[in-house]
Image (cartoon, rainbow, N blue to C red; front, side):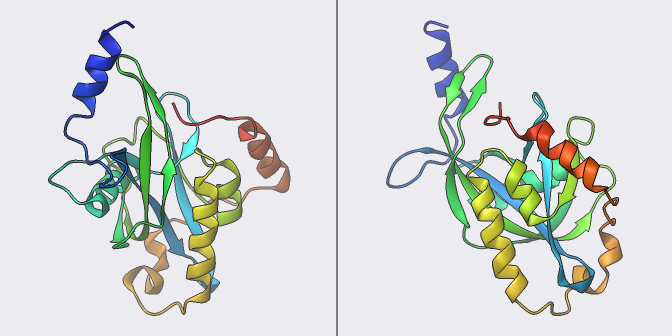
Length: 201
């Protein structure tokens, strides 16, 4: 790409937030989660636009927007869900991505928990992505980048220990459509389908 890629890489990341110590370019992402009947925790994943790999809603940050607000915005645009976002990130994950003009950009992804209170039937990127609710264990197995799996399991373990309380989502679980029941054969086929996937592109 010669001089083209560095130029577009610089333009593409000019106004994104950077880590205060490492100066790494930052993206923000959300792990949408809900508590089903009986206290079972589930998380929502979306597919990437180009390769169809399962990941979390994530995207660019802006200098004038906090990381938490950016994560909340991505959850609405990419997954069509609203909810309560954590004040602090669950962790940071290396999430490189390759662009057509800019080439590879080495992002650090700040990951926030988002407790879903509303799920829309129509949203901005509905025609570009699939979304699906998973058990934490299954989500951790197929999510990309793979490092997100540990954060998903940690989130689920923490929330499972907490009392269910009486929030809007918990009292009115019908706001979140019940995921279709899969047979063990279907579940195994989907696991094999995603077993050899690499990082999101």
